[in-house]
Length: 159
Image 1 (cartoon, one colour):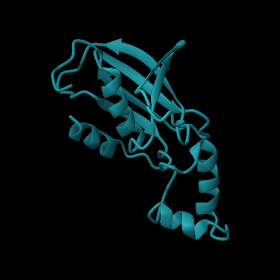
Image 2: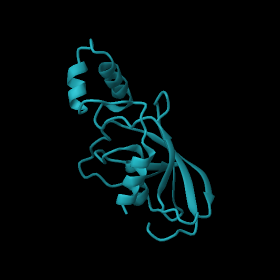
Image 3: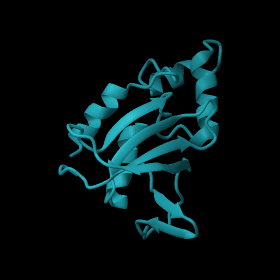
């Protein structure tokens, strides 16, 4: 993905069920493979590639075969929307994140429903799981924070 692409696709990914919405707008080369798109999605959303994944386009499923037939863990679902195709801009390295809102949920917190429980626990010092959840997440967690510069630095490192 280091060469200047002929076309650039602008995509928006939104975590299904997140309220308020957790989303990212980013651009990738028009010839990006699903493998590379998966890697980009991991970075822009803040995931750690801890779960199996699949892409569903219409009625076609794309996924890495799983010999153990294990279900998809926390079952995070994302909508990926192609917002447009355009010419690349001079001086921009792709992929690039343009915008986003809210922090990505921590991996293994139990999907979107577990994330809601997690947020309740960390925001209420009287909650019976407050201490253990704060320790599990490594101290502080602010669900409103999205760091665009940090995401783009990570995208530059993945090349």
